[in-house]
Amino acid sequence: MRPTLKRSIAAASLVAVLGIGAVLPAASAQPEQPRRPGDTPRQPVRPGDAPRQPVRPGDAPRQPGDRGEAMMSVQAAQRQLDRAVDMLGESLKDASRKDESLAAVAGVQRASAMARVAASRDIAPDKLDRFRREYIELSRHALDLELAMLDGKADQVKAGYDKVARLRDDLMERYGEGEPRPGRPGGR
Image (cartoon, rainbow, N blue to C red; front, side, top):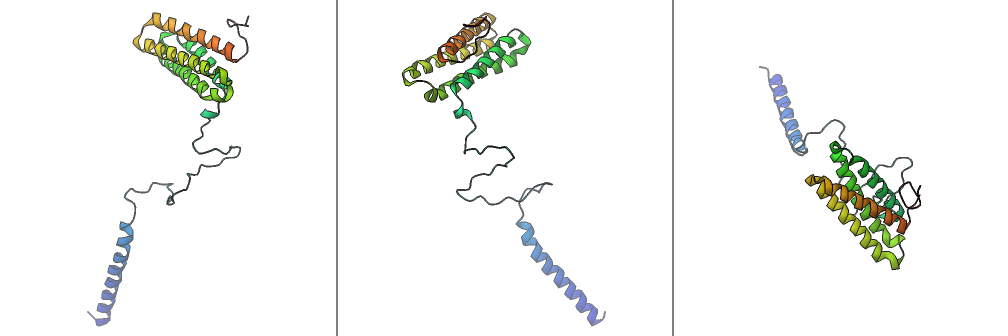
């Protein structure tokens, strides 16, 4: 071999070795998980940085942790309660709709809790204790109804639903939600 060819091969080998040496540390610094198409590099999170939510036209600014639950009024909670009890009554007519019935009774419990949360803002202080106690009673009856549904006790389910519906009507009349509807006080 000629000396210039030997030098060229040696130089090429040296460049290749140095190139690999420069690439290996960079390759080892890659994350362990392979990148998926569409992944974007993440920015480091600094203390005090709040996660940013995408802003769409028409979105209202939100406070951190605000999902709207605490802002609901007693009247809005009573409307949810009314819908949940009506849905429960309809779903209980068909035994094959057990999942719907369980979801509806959970809706009754949720609406009762939301009414209690909103009560301190919407209910007069002298009525607040009674209001909370009555909605706790409604929640207890809804829980008993749910247990009867899970146990398959049809007679207790019927009695429990009647008690929940009667309490709903009394509470709505006493604390104000209200369009009178057929079968309710003030209705036809």
